[in-house]
Amino acid sequence: MQQVIEPTEISFDAYTMCSFLPDLDSGRAIPLVLIGYRRSQDPWFVWLVPKEGISAAGLTDDPYYTKVLHDPHTYFSKKLSKYVEETGSVKRGIEMLIDCHQNHLAFTPLTQLSEMPFRHPLEVQLVGAV
Image (cartoon, rainbow, N blue to C red; front, side):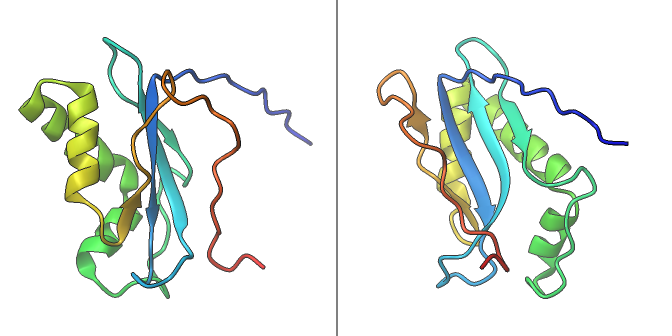
């Protein structure tokens, strides 16, 4: 039986995308999550990986990143909550998350949609993609 997926429109004031880089020198990445917000609202997570995470086999031997990949939903939710509480602002919390995690967890710059119209889809290269 084929399941029909209904598209959902998501409206952000700003967003960033986090990807996992298996090799810091590589241009290849695994998109994990899109994090956005609207004024006066909690941050939104648009997950690009399954709830149960992904296997770190062949991607990393580092136990820290293995744990992140195994349960990205919990990891990003806890980290961002901590930064939002610390800064008192969703926007500044997201900016702090971006600033503090730029190695294997690579973030795009926080894009303000009110200042820069969305002109083209995000471009990512999936690991193993031809």
